[in-house]
Length: 161
Image 1: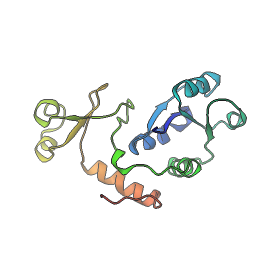
Image 2 (image 1 turned 90 degrees about the vertical axis):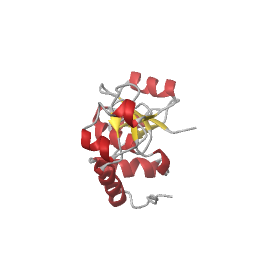
Image 3 (image 1 turned 90 degrees about the horizontal axis):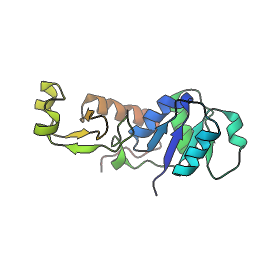
């Protein structure tokens, strides 16, 4: 079973980085409260929060109180606390906006009208979010993300195969 998260409003940037690593991560813009925990339990998600008082609650949901202030340290903390090693094949497979799994997009039919012409000419592989129709491709942004992960998470395997 895949690990799934729900993060409170104080962990928006962490949410993005967990999605980049391929983790299904809901973002809750409201308060981390009893409803937040009930939603986590009902959906089988690990609750991530900065609210220390939620850490002492007992119940059917696992709660991780994130101590670190900045997203890179938060990401490292969550991975280490939960002893997670992200699957490199799942990196960049989830929409950063919607949290939906990305689908392969045909360059001619799906992507041509939605990306700049130079991107369409240079790249042949595109992914599309089925919910928001956002298009992703392996460009310089992906390369910068990989470099960032290598420097921030040196304990992970970053090899390509």
